[in-house]
Picture 1 (tube, rainbow, N blue to C red):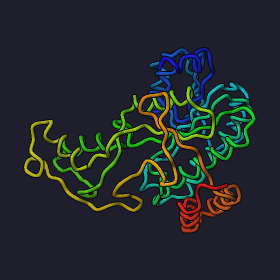
Picture 2 (tube, rainbow, N blue to C red; picture 1 turned 90 degrees about the vertical axis):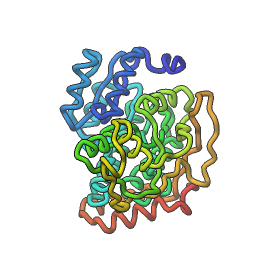
Picture 3 (cartoon, rainbow, N blue to C red; picture 1 turned 30 degrees about the vertical axis):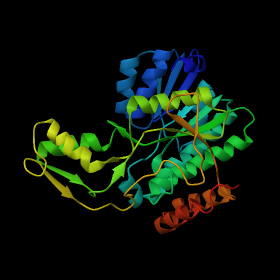
Picture 4 (cartoon, rainbow, N blue to C red; picture 1 turned 180 degrees about the horizontal axis):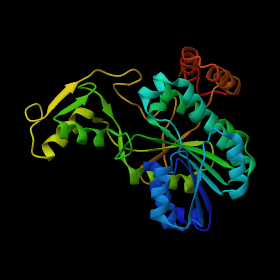
Amino acid sequence: MDCVFPFIRGKVCMVTGGGGSIGSELVRQLARIGAEKIVIIDIYENGAYDVKCEVGDRVTVEIASVRDYDKMDYIMSQYKPDIIFHAAAHKHVPFMERNPEEAVKNNIRGSEIMAELAEKYGADNFVLISTDKAVEPISVMGASKRICEMLVYERSQRSQHTKFTAVRFGNVIGSNGSVIPLFKKQIERGTVTVTDKEVTRYFMTISQAVELVLNSLAISNGGELFVLDMGESVKILDIAEKLIRDIGKEPYKDIKIEFTGLRQGDKLHEKLFYDFETPQKTQCDKILRVNGSAIAGLTSEIKKLYRMAAENDRGGITELMMKITDKDLIGRI
């Protein structure tokens, strides 16, 4: 990551969601590279406290929600960060299916606030952390992140200074809520649950995820999406069986595997790109680039979502989010 050093050394960096598994590793790497100051924005104290204790004085913690414009405006005016890494988001698919208004308020509105303030206070770079679930989404969480991608792209087309980009993650091994820690806990209890025998996912390590985020700074012109080439997708069932065998047990004999069926919002297989996106290689090994995209009228559609969220119109939110992210509408603005 030598090419990233000039972009980070001596800079003020802000990491929203900096107490989470991805955010905290990003903070550690920024400190190693030589960031002058790292500002963690998080609503959850404990994770932020832990990484502050580990990294030390270069880290400042602000307990705040990215959905609170006035508070975030105040914080941004105090630090005026050079680079913003926006990792704060609700990410659990079943929870967002039941609470779509929170996906609107936190994921979409929070991203819009941070992007707007990045430009207002002259940040050099704004990097949105997205997900492969944003590609042809069938879940509220995935749709909310796709709308965030479009929002950031639209902002990039108007920005006079700030470079706005996004990175898409696959499943991050070892992150909070990921499948492998869950399987390990279930193995201890004697029964592992898998949604479907055929379900597959793309996987990346936390270190790969952070490298993708940091390297994107060095190769960004603004308006792009960066994705790690993660090779072939992996069967979740294969992972469960391997973890059982790794401790000297036999799947289905010593440890049960139960199939529970896909949850609402779950896909059988994820994709990394829309069909209209053309991945291109970059100078960074295994990092692919695609041009960002949005739909016409995005701003007015998002305003409708905000009104629905204020009214807790859950059915209306879900319906409109799926309309906004319809693959036949994307790609033109």
